[in-house]
Image (cartoon, rainbow, N blue to C red; front, side, top):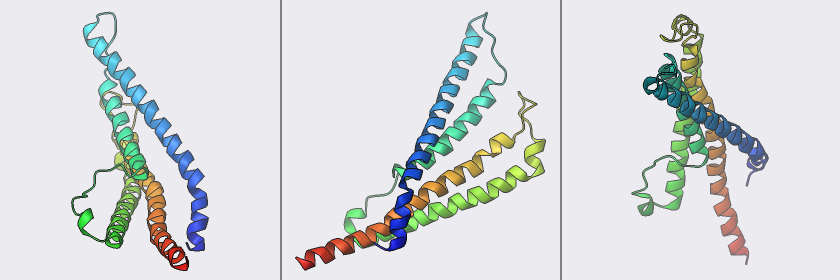
Length: 181
């Protein structure tokens, strides 16, 4: 394995910590969603509990963040849906190449989301827009989910690309060791 890939493998603890932090944030968002939703539903049917007018918009915003962050987590665990019907019919090398190309495509998508999401958040549109039920809260926070998704995708796709490239060298090293014996 090339020296650069060995140096990049040292970053695995950073990815592990990042994964755990994002997973913890997703758990907090889920707990918040559940609490606010229960409160809102109870407020509709129980007379002495008030139904907060802001619950729906806040729950939806939290769900968006949870969805994009958990999608980034799925990249790391390779948990996304993928087409595998033809995997058994193509060579291992072609399969590795197609997986690497797919990872590069997702990395590019993450970069587009990050760049254009930051541009959207920096535009006057994000500051002018307000939540209907929370007029004191800017739509910036809703739009911020776009660059957040891009950043999460980039972080974990870089790790996947390094692992995919490393897989090409692992096979060659195993073949070389077998030939020596």
